[in-house]
Image (tube, rainbow, N blue to C red):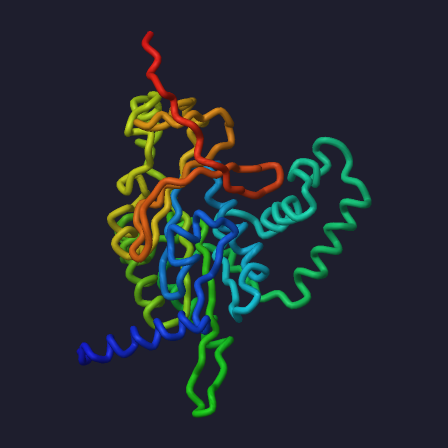
Amino acid sequence: MWKPQKQSFIEALSYLDKRRKGEIKSIKTPWAKFNDASIDGIEWNTITVIGGRPASGKTLIADQIIREAFVLNSEQDFRVLQFQFEMLGRVQAIREYSSVINRSYKHLCSADGELSEEDLQRCYTYSKKKVKNSKIDVVDTPQTVDEFKKEVINYFEAYHTLDTEHQKVYTNTLITIDHSVLFKKAPYEKDKQDMLNNLGEALTELKKKYPVAFIVLSQLNRNIDHPDRSEDGKYGNYILESDIFGADALLQHADLVVGINKPAKQKIRFYGPDRYIIDDDNTLVLHFLKCRNGDTRMSFFKAEFEKMRIVEMTTPATQQKRIKI
């Protein structure tokens, strides 16, 4: 069913006015660089895809966004629903304790010495405070796209309210998916690519109907590990849109696409044509590949894996001259 174009212009003006007045805000992330690349954070009614190879920090990014979301966006009323297909809920909770009390996961599991009673008590204290008024829920059973879609709809219905005219008002919800490839394939889907196409369509349909912001974690294709792309100072060092697994299925639906690279993992010390000097093994490069309403760019971060967090860092210096051998 069509609608008059003027309706879209009227809706846009209303949105701009509410943004101007602060009645509508994006979800701020913990990083100014991330917020600046998008629209002062993650906009509602959008899909964000974050792709990276294993151990590149993509799950860490999603976890940190959620962990700090309610503090950074305290003036907003929203919930979080996590589709956690890869990691046990217990593991995720320990990772959060690690970040909060500044102790490594290994230490908390008494793998490098016995966990002290004091540190355990700090975990207890945080847990009591965390769950008291928690607005975070978890789905940890792998699902098909159809089951996922039904779960999301049921969630919005469960937390809706009624306005003065008895019309439904849905609660803003930040939904994370870890990882897209772990959805179960439905009988009518011939392969993973077909499943991802259906997932992209479902996400777009849901974001148009409900006040939701999706964060979808994805793997990279294995060609990123090809030796040619690990050669210092090459354009191939960079993450490209085509490197995102199922790129054709997800990119057309996504509003923000971020590719994460950890140069030291490929022994890259001079990153890309500009030859950024990588002197820290935990340097992460975030390539903002698609910013539908923002600015594409490349930004540098540092992963503090022992503390389960990611922090911003200054852009590394570049090598002035190429070394001839």
